[in-house]
Length: 118
Image (cartoon, rainbow, N blue to C red):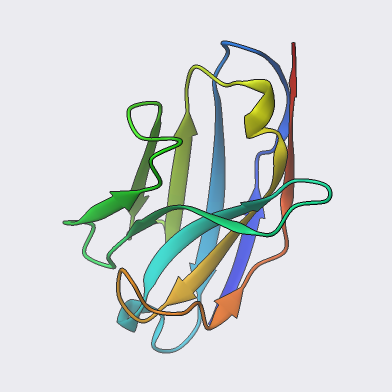
């Protein structure tokens, strides 16, 4: 399974940004797709996850109500819509393929940088 994240950039606090993750490869439909992030000096943390069917999602408390994960399997793409961004949301965002909503990520894409100015 191959994943490629894109769409990061610079946004002001309170603004919105959507990052995308292209998912491909054999058996990619066997995995849920998660978003994670890592800020400088901090450990990588879970942000959101969606099943392959797109029927179930789960969010970290820190982003619940502000971020929305979705997918378009016709385009092999998973999206993370980020609204009401805060400076503490700034990080490198990674997407990953994992076996189920609570599975350990098995495949990782490269990150995309999200910078939030105050």
